[in-house]
Image (spheres, rainbow, N blue to C red):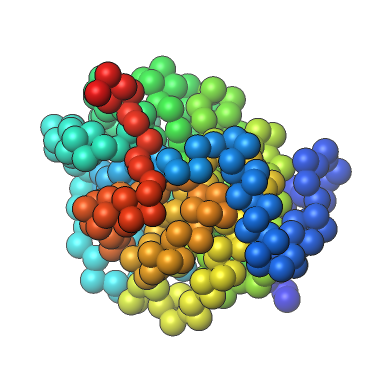
Length: 336
């Protein structure tokens, strides 16, 4: 309880602000009978999106490990003995090779992740800017996740052509310091503000199954839905319990509770892409089908998500074909 109080003390939500949706409204959605909730979410989804179309993104780790942060879920923290091998920033040519492969597989967005606490001006950031330009030259959308970001750095990313910046809120403001102590929830919000200020689309979501309560899931969605602008992409991750991390033995989240969260996210953020992210390797096709019915319409493809396993692209294509669903057509495929 002391931790929860400390988290709230640092968080500005105590200041009155306009709300698109209240916590009570979100709680009430969670409490609906599952069939009613999914039916309602499916209706909202069909009003805004093609229900049989899924946007495909590919995630590339451009710098792996040796991160000074202490995020309890992450193998890339230098504070934990996870056996992860450190890999320095990739060469631009290697990133472009992976971008070409992702495009050929049908992805229309390449997301590049670097295990940094924050962006630092210098040659490495300059290299990332060139990676963004290279991805854009292929006609793909470009997304990066580089840690905390200042306004002038966001402006440089925008100038390079960046479409999306990913910076997840992870969990509720009340629970945040139980998961991360090396930065604050406000730090997260400040980075998102810099991203919005530069005119870059926000990609922000969270992780389920970190020992949080339903009220924490309510709090996470409440924060996301009441950002100054609703995120363009909302990745919903199921915790991959990684050996050596503090959350290695966390109790897995119930599949139906995961589906409920997808459904509530769709209802309160109808214009956002709701992305099934980490954890799909532990989900059956039936559970994923329920998630798509409940409003998920984006997914990460490829056999690896940073350091976590992910289903192979061929398996995903086969699954979607079995559902009668399809990848979103990328711009370069319009004439085919």
